[in-house]
Length: 80
Image (cartoon, rainbow, N blue to C red):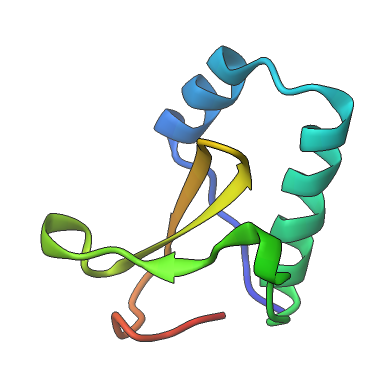
């Protein structure tokens, strides 16, 4: 199982997003899957970013509501 460290930007964005109960459940389901090194469902559109964010992956909770993550000390191609 991976350890979770929440960045202050995530906390700010989460408050601003005002998620509905369905999207909140998806967010915590996806984070739980990542912590357990499981694949995310296809609907999350999980993918690598490029450029300045090349060590970062992103998934979408709903529509245009993305979540970015980075693994501390990990190679840029690490998935989970």
